[in-house]
Image (cartoon, rainbow, N blue to C red; front, side, top):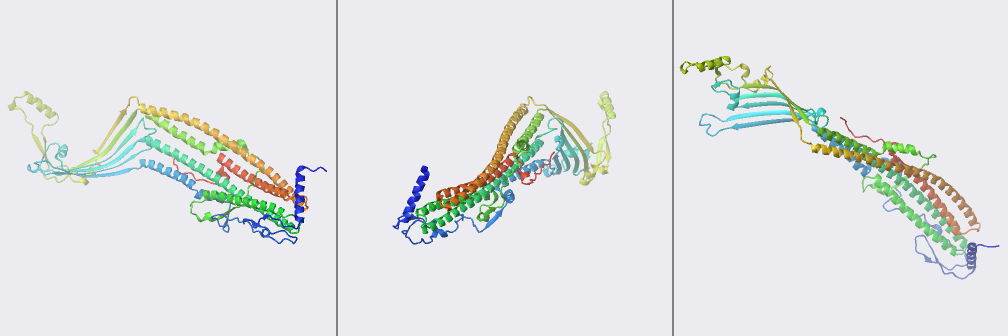
Length: 604
């Protein structure tokens, strides 16, 4: 019978091992004691049954991790991890504060339309050099002016409601209200005035002015910061999902590595028993011990990967760097689920074009640009402003000692006739202008501030004025240049939107392909794992019957472990691919039943 070269070499090794075990001479070799200890020299092999070694009573592998209490195990579901991330993640908190800050900017701009109440009391003392030598005293004036001013958003006008009171002892002011000479002392004069001023743009700044422009832009920027917040939240949720499934894989990989290690421990126990019975050479134990050490190293590496995956998840979920939850051992409770059908590309593209917040942000930028264009176009128009004033004025006198007023004898046409006659008559015959004394000041003019306040409601008190201001700038190059710049930005934004739409389409197509690929990988990995189980079971039976070797058995065990890891990796990759697809289509909130409150944004 012809024997292949590989099998011939294997038979030669087995024959040599049998020959060595049949000899009663001592064998000098190094054997491995308890896993993790330094190797020790073995005693010579004798014909007596070998005693049970330490390796047959190996303890479970040490799965402790630095800074983590394995006894403090906390179950964690994916929904709970997402909820905690939304509450505690620092990046989400930063973008949430950006939205809150932009809300304060809008309130700050709206404050321009808050009415302002102003009071200006003023006391003045006037004196002239030598005034006291002429028997005159210094004059004292007291003025209290007050008003309420504000802006009106529709139309861009402004108003002022004023109420002024003035007490003066100034002789010039007194002379303005006297029709003749004052004989005797007159006390202070009191003036009161109540009215409204209103200015209204009729052309430029009527439809939009700078204040209304800034408010509208601030509102669009609020929408942009809200879009940034939602996009950041989706990114964090996607990272949480990926980290969660990475932790699921790391723990399953660790379990598979531990199970594989335990198989090696059992193999070592069986080999030791066969060596003790003289059915196997001591060299067989070294082969198993090498595999045992390799698998122990695999467990250590798998444990490290568990720590890495758990720390990444905690970084996304915990708020404080010194939180006691860092010492907890988190155990995921959710398992990956596989959809039986493929994802529709058309539906995914439609969702992305409607929901992607990068596109929304650019559309809000277009709105801001449209506001700028309207404003700069409005600034190219001439300025025509209407100015109006309506007031009620009152007057009174105080402390009147002699109330005789001398008025001219001839007034009006009589005075004209007198002057004409005097031009014709000689000087001795001319008619002199005389004065007629009028005693008693009208009662409605006597009093202090109280009387002047009452006088403003007399029928002869109202006053009003209406005026128009025209302003025609030459060239107006500033407004025209600003308008041209806004038109250029409009074209840039249109181009940027087309570019971003292409980026979105590519991301969605790749994400859909990744989901479908991961789904097919899961099906293939399941078949591979099932066949690896069948192969291992058959190889184990061959090994127990003496028709196989430990080397081939280890290969089958490692193949099964790798197949199991490939299956769980494909399942978790499918879940991560779904998360990436949700992020690419911005459907993360809907898929996870998350409702995000919109910021307060009162429109015009």
